[in-house]
Amino acid sequence: MQGSARRLTAAVAGMLAAGAMAPGVAGAATNVTVALGFKPDVVSTPYYVAQDMGYYKQAGLNVTLNYDKLPNPPQAVADGSKFQFGSAGGDAALLGVSKGAGVQVVAQQYEQYPVGAMWLADGGPTINKPADLKGKTIGISAPGSSTDYGLSALLQAGHLKRSDVKVIAVGFTETEALINHQIDVAMTFTDNEPVNARALNHLVHVMKVSDYKNLVSTGIIAGTKLIKSNPAEVTAFVKATMRGEKYTLQHRDAAFKMALKRMPEVISAKQIATQKLILDARMKYQQPVAGHQVGWSNPAAWPTTLNFMQSIGAIAKAGAPSVKNVFTNRFTDLANVRM
Image: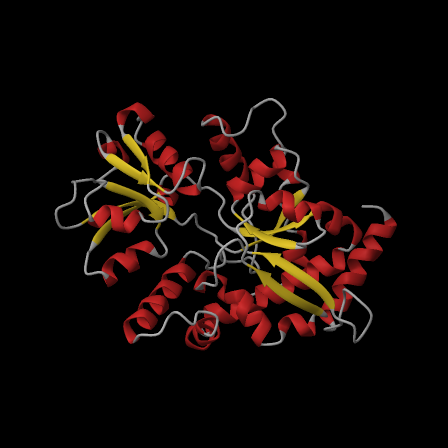
């Protein structure tokens, strides 16, 4: 590391340790917009906590959460003109960088890949292992989605080909399609849809992709231009958001109330109880790895994810990105938020 870079890192660490407003001039908050790509939801609870507990304000940031469905979130964040940060899975980050988007995952929110197969316990098929998916009609949300990739991972684990199953794109109605027997198995997010199925009085079985392949899941992405020009802003945002993550893990009830304010459509006691169970389920996938800071990304999972994406043809082997260019633990190291 060059002397100037070393001094910069030390300066950033010093500012954060002292609680200084690192990104801008004292008293002047820096405006930051985050591309979440989904409607207000309990999955974003750590961001809501960071807002309501004043963590962003303490970091010198004025944070706006944006829910627009973007066709290419990594590229939108790489551009930096509207979005400084975003939420993206490891698969999406790798795919984006392979197509020229200048982004890096700067903190990990999910430590486990929350995708898997789900089928009805009553009247559903008998499935005990990935190979048992053979001959089944399987619903995914859309081609090229995380549920589609998750299916490919399970098929590989079961030594099956796509031609061994019938795949149907059902949008975000996997649970309904399953209940209505349009499909035998739903590839879905196992941190919320099993809860929704139970709320509809349907017990389900689940087979997690993470039990068979260690793929990188959702994290925070930042543009490489911002990382180079203003590392203090990136560190401040990561620190504040990971403080929100830690608070959510430790104070679930209080954090849920903050999230609930963003979801005015959740009104009835049953709806509220279901959303609370979904938050509980989601946070199980977000538990920090023992011995590491909140937001640490497992370096071993990145080559596994890249090799998997190449094996299914999503990323060409020629000119594939180096994983060291797609993620970094530099900012979570500097933030040093620990349980």
